[in-house]
Length: 253
Length: 152
Image (cartoon, rainbow over all chains, first blue to last red; front, side, top):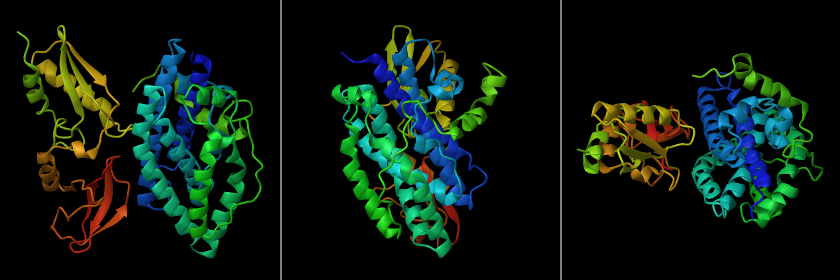
């Protein structure tokens, strides 16, 4: 017997990760350092928002309360969001944005790879679709981290600062709670701790090439995916993201 | 009398892709099935990229085209699995794309030649381009930047 409440939570976590990161990345539209990067960031944001429609669409079906993916995205308040803390961190400079992207992409790729084998066919088919896009994301974010890390003194220092700043938000991705455990037991999602070794190996390879030092602390902020303690940044972001539906309820394109 | 499934396929082969109008939605390989369900024709469509904004326009274009052919009840089914791959572009599509100025996808991961001057001296600018399905490349001989339809 599947735990429907946990399944809904899990789908919101997947969808809120891509929604919040997708919105963050879209904030760069028209502001990136060069045109090609602007286009690449917008494309990445678009992929993530597209994946959000699939995850939150399924979440809404599973919930069965008559809400749609749009309702979940645009009408929930901050305490109902289930994204990990990493995705809601501010963009900072371009290097910080790309470091956040890379850390998320490597986890995302590992997670989606396992989800293609999910016992839930709907989850497996969304993962199979999304993973093709995420392979492009991780290739680009990894290349950029290497170029900037192994770049000038200035770019190297900024990338090291970004890694040091964001590192405490990585642990949450791998620490299972009751929802994660229920999903793993049902065969819907992998045991999160099983993703860590491949993540660490991928990270060590790229950071080595980027001449960046991975912090040796394993301190991890928590509270994003459970919704218990988001950072102060998420509320501000959601205010921007939702203002139109809040000001003009039901407005459509 | 209901038109045959083959007839509906033939009509769909006239519906252009909204972003790349030289190829049809059938050439693109996103129409995955046509079937009659009572008096309703159901067309299964799969997205190229999950966030591609053309997806909803394509569904609307298909409905409109079939309404014009006299089919009153049309249902578009969004089908995710198996996920779309650029291998599903049909054989004609490559030549049509090339003529339009877009290098077709290749298993090698990059274009064979510049669609403007056919030089094979080409370089990648960015893995991301003007739409989710394209990357940006440039010809080192004629210097023209061009789109490459990327493989997924």
